[in-house]
Image 1 (cartoon, one colour):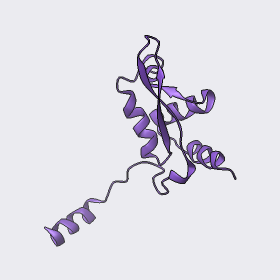
Image 2 (cartoon, one colour):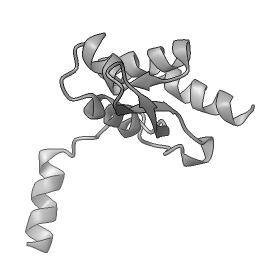
Image 3 (cartoon, one colour):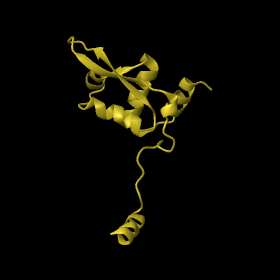
Image 4 (cartoon, one colour):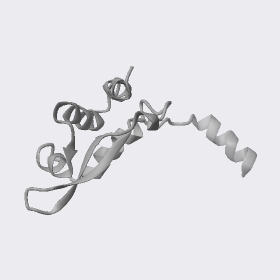
Length: 108
């Protein structure tokens, strides 16, 4: 399995809506810009959508492109497969309240 296939395999397992929108667009077009995220998908904070993908363990590379108004804007594409963070699929994990309580009691 090549490096790109590893990233694609991981990316296809993501189910979180905002992260999935970013992933599907990158798979179809090769990259997604902050302009795409704002204008096409209506996300007011485009970097948060990219961060959602990274929170799922999928590596993203940020690079600059020229936007519709001539300014430089951020764009995102899949990154190096060696930067895949195993165990992050599914996003953040919530600790049970009892575990949190016992840790606080033990450590103050």
